[in-house]
Length: 182
Ligand code: AP5
Ligand code: MG
Image (cartoon, rainbow, N blue to C red):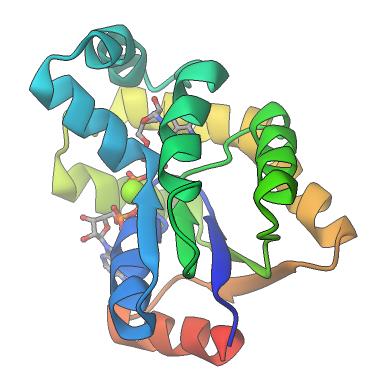
């Protein structure tokens, strides 16, 4: 069984939904940088105040801020984990690689959740989170294409990437993912 897993995919692909299920069934630590940042915003911390406007525009929060959040949580534990929404660009991927080398916990599997743009937009519009209005969703998609998509080649080159069709029922997608995780 793969125990150190990364979920990659555009906004609305179902990373959070599927990560929650896989973390529960396989007893993994689920780290969503988006959720962690929203918790900081809700708490009104200095970090949250810095992140709030950036998130409202659908841009990426600074690498150093996100890395600090992830480092603290990964370094603590020796069990399996599942990263959702991180890394988001090559700089974060390289920093993560270095951190994981330091703690001796290399990534075992990268799952790409693939879905067409129109379905993504429809899913997010019907959810209605603070950053789920059409203009911001479109910007999140642009940011994903520009900054996050290059990670597909980065992890493919390392032989770590598997793609999953992220359409259909939540249960059907979970089964596809479980088959990869083992
Ligand atoms: P983040 O929270 O990561 O948002 P995102 O990538 O835009 O993706 P979502 O969380 O919206 O979608 P998801 O793929 O998790 O899908 P979900 O399961 O929710 O990031 C938000 C912001 O934080 C960023 O824009 C950035 O500002 C900042 N940030 C976060 N990480 C960062 C980082 N590393 N560096 C810098 N900045 C960072 O599903 C979506 C909806 O679809 C839900 O309503 C769900 O119920 C529904 N759904 C799921 N599966 C299905 C299905 N099979 N059928 C029908 N509906 C479904
Ligand atoms: Mg999410």
